[in-house]
Image (cartoon, rainbow, N blue to C red; front, side, top):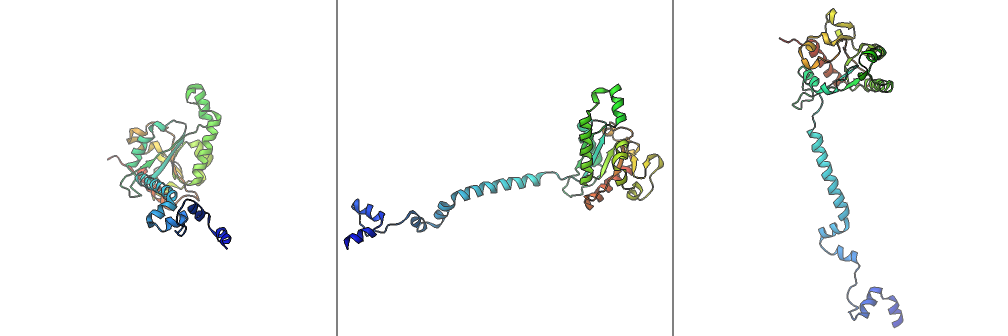
Length: 250
């Protein structure tokens, strides 16, 4: 009988008995001890790594939210695509355009995005080879620029374009909204390239701001709407377009 009793004893009881302890004392597992202890202490013990990583994630999320909230929203986008390098002047040009735009997103700031893309027509490249070879871009870069421009147009994220006539005829003419449809009247004949495009440098707006002087004289301004264009973006772009065309210096 004693033998069976010894067999049924737990290992913990046997060790305690060998050490001279009281076998009648309760032998608890570590998990029993944590359950019977302080509640919050047990929560920390069982979940400390989840709590640590959760706290780190929460901190990152808070920082990200503040960062996003602090960024200036863009009210309108206008893109230049043509033979001139204008990226170093884009900020000043954007500031000039902001003078006729509005705070469409109501964040207290009129912020205009003015990305630029260099594309040279075959005729322009031939001229540059003879007269200004340092400005000539490679055939690969030219093809890449064309691809980027086409992708941008299809995305519908930009409606107003300042564009070289060659590229206008080559890619976007059918997608342009008639100037008279946007303005509500027929523009002056000297401004018109055709129904969908006007000569930007002939506008009083372009003549008034020195920051726009580097834009080539034959550059066209047009408004494009694709299936991907947001309705509100289009309306805001049309409003800015009208501000440019209707601008009076006095």
